[in-house]
Image 1 (cartoon, rainbow, N blue to C red):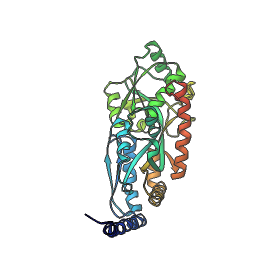
Image 2: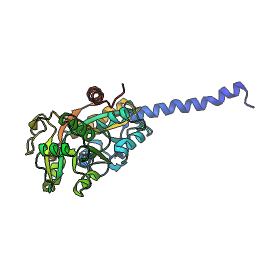
Image 3: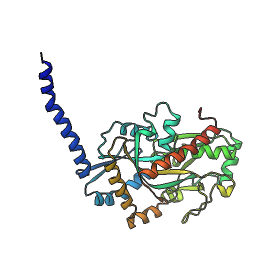
Length: 324
């Protein structure tokens, strides 16, 4: 039996070890990074998040002074990856792609999302892409008005694919259907990388995708409309508003970390991504890919999430999808 005095003595080394560990944690944050960083994407390869990460990889490694490994953890429209992120070590060595509205809508509308928006910490949002309505090149539909006409003639029969459930593509489809007074069927995929083959293979009638796919797919598709206030430079595609449909939305992309990651590490990462966003070659590549450059640091990212949350709650309440 250990007597009370002996127990106290026995605890001294453990307490000292715990204090030492805390000190090491501070040193770890000050020295960060000291090893390779895993940049995880919660979607299939080949989509906008993957394209972005590949463009960032070399300048990130230069800024960090460490290697950057890009890996994938697709599933449930990104929810699987973000759920796993909440259980990762809060040391800044696992950085995950982070998308709005996905990280807002999934916990808002799904009981099984596996995470809450507040459980992941945004570091930086560096680009955005407007939604774009695409059909195969051999489709009889030439305009967004043609699509609306076909949908009204066949209520519920038209299928629209997209990247993820409760994502920018999903909510863009809901917005469009609402303002156009049509009923369509939305089919979610694990990412753009798997949604595009479904469109080209004739498994869905249309795709609510993103503007970069207009450039990527070229003459394989016809872009009927893009969800912007004004036409995008370099894209000869009308806006939904040009056709009389007030649909303006898309996805914001950035990176996030586990919620308990030290602020010092978060701020270091944010500075790195801000510097990468000034890389001339990357900026040109973003433009060539029809990405919009964004610069939201940690605090601005939180404000962006809060603002978009209010907008989505208003829309979903109007559609009767939100019981609050």
